[in-house]
Length: 462
Image (cartoon, rainbow, N blue to C red; front, side, top):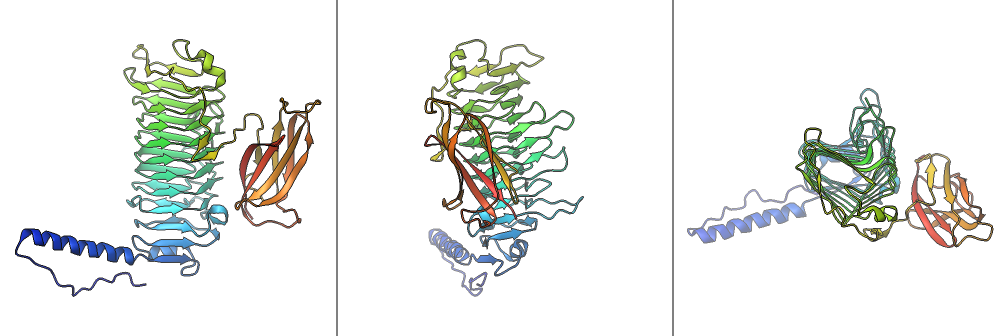
C-alpha cells in the first residue's frame, strides 16, 4: 500500500474574504487527516517481515504491526514512532524474550524517543529479561493486555524489573505483572515522575532483593508522581527486607478502588513530603502493617477515607491515635500529629470484583505452582481447611482442573475426598489423552465442596 495519496499538484485555494479562507483551510486540513488515516498500513510478522524490529523500521506513524504466534528473541525499539504493535491471538503463544549477551543485556521492549500514548504494545508475553523488561523513559505510551512475567534482573541497584517508567504519561492497563525480581524500587512496576494511568492490572508475586538494606515497593513503586491508580489487584508481593508491596514516595497520586491484600511485609508505605489520596480501597491481610507512614513534613495531610480494613480490625477503628494495622512515624523535626482525614470512615464490606471479574482470594487455600513458568513439569500446592461443609472426619471433596486460555478443560488432576491440610500434585504438561500440550498460558482451578476457591495462571515455556 502506498504511504501517501496526496496529490502534489493540488491547487492552493484562495479567497478574498477571511471567513471563506478559514473554511477552505479547514476543509484542506480535514482532507489531509482523512487521507492520512486511510493510508495507515497493517504490517504482518513474519509474513511481511521476519522480525518485529524490521517491521518497525519500515512502519510509519499510525501503522499497525500484527505479530503471529511464536517466540521472538529480540529487543523491540519503537525508535520514536507512534505505531501499534499487537499480537494476532493474545499473549498465550506470542512471546518476546530479549537476547542476553552479558554485559550487554537488553530490555524486551524500549520506548525512549518521545513516543506518545499512540505508541501501543498490546497482547504479548514479555519474559526472560535480565534488565527492565519494558523500558519507558522520556516517552508516553500505552501498555495493554500483556503478561509481564518472570523477568529476573541480575543487578540489585536497578528499578522496575517488570516495567520501568520515568518522565512519562504512560497508560498501563489490563496487564498481569507477576514473578518479576529486582533489587531496589518497584519489583513489578516502577513509576518515576509519572502522571499517566495505571488501571485494571493484576500485580502479584513480585520480589525485591535489598541492596544495602534498601528496597521499596516489591509490587509497585510511585516516586514523585501524580498519576491515577485505579482498580488494580496487588497481592502476594514479597521482599527479603522490610519493604512494602506498594510504596508512595513523595507522590500526590490518586489511589482508588484497588485491592492491596495478602502481601508479605507492609501493604502500602507512604514516605516523603507529598501525600497521596487513598480512598475506597481494600487494604487488609498484609503480614506486617496494612499502612505504614513516614512523613517528612507533618503539615501534609493524607486524604484517607472509605477504605475496607478487613474484619479483624473493624473493632479497633475507634481506637486512638490510629488503628493497630496503621503505623505512623512522625517528622523527627516536628512532633505535631500527622492529620489523616477521616481515616475512621471505613467500609464494612470489601470490593468483590475488578472489571466485572470475580477475584478469588487465597487466604484459606494457598494455591500456587512452582516453578512458574515451567518446562516440563510444575508442582501445584494447595491447602484444605476444615469448615462447616467438611465431612464428619474433617475432610472435603476437592477437584483441581487445568484449562486452556479458551476455557476448555485440558486435564483433571484431582477429584477425591481429601483431609484438612497441605496437599500437592504434579502436572506434567499433558492432557487427558496423555499428549503434551503446546506452550502458552493455562489456568488451574481449585474447587472445594462444590465451590470455586481460587483460579491461578501458569505458563508453559518450551
